[in-house]
Length: 444
Image (spheres, rainbow, N blue to C red):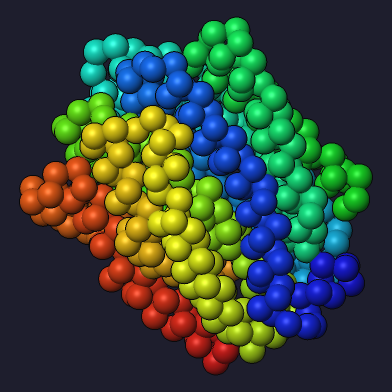
């Protein structure tokens, strides 16, 4: 039994959820904090078009990153039960094929996105010089996306072994590299968006290296890769990853819809939305990490036949989510003024930052419910259910609310509508996940 497996099999599950989420969030927040600083550097150039371009680009990068998250969920869901059943040879085989298949699939996907970039940028509503700058930045950065996917897969494999610390360090090192390169390339060399893209390349190279090394050094390395293993694992991987990818893609699609609506209100509104979008993962990185952290805990307890601990993990994850949301929302509200000043935000940009750092941030709790419910469904054989919930939330739970309130309150109404739609689907997701847990308890 590995150290991580022993931790998941005994002890306080709330503490396990908290530790895995907090350590996972350190890595995520390290990347997002530096990404936020990147946005600050771009805003200091006093180029509204460049700032808006980062906002449009963020919607596209969110889309490609979501694809990688879906693959990592699939690999983790295959590796963690093998670890829980103490079959480390099988875990190593699945990790090997997971890395290889994800790199291939990720490269093909990134190439498709790169070719379609002019159309994608146009659909988002970018025009003129802003569209040109958005396209330039994305064409430089998108080819590095497979490196980020390798890092995500490695982090998921490490979490499957219960190694929260090394999983955290994968993205921490990427953030350190980005933090060092950003000011040099963006400000000192005055490369602007080009510098931001080159810094992203350096960061993703570091992430890929730091994901591969600990798996090789501490968990038996990799199996000999051959076509038979790839063919054998492709089906099971895609059976989980395909619906997980569809599930993850729903969020950036919903964000793209909101970006297009906000674009009608000018570059100031897009900039405000972009800043709120960068603040969200920084403030709620723990919640974003919660889904990836709770999945391996659920998977290992499922592999060990402990459905009582699966249910307890699920409920503890919801409790932990609520506590984090309340604390972070209060902090955002307290520092909303300095945050707006940091970005030199005025007018509608400042209004949207203030709106986010208040009641809207509290509503992120319902997104957290969806994250936890999706993790449960993905690891309990009901991945397609997560797909339906996520797409429902980001279509039926976004478009009508955002359209309706947007006509009343402008760009503020769009963001309020987007958040309000999550309430219904968050509650629905929890109810459906509890049904899945109940069926597994009954052996149905």
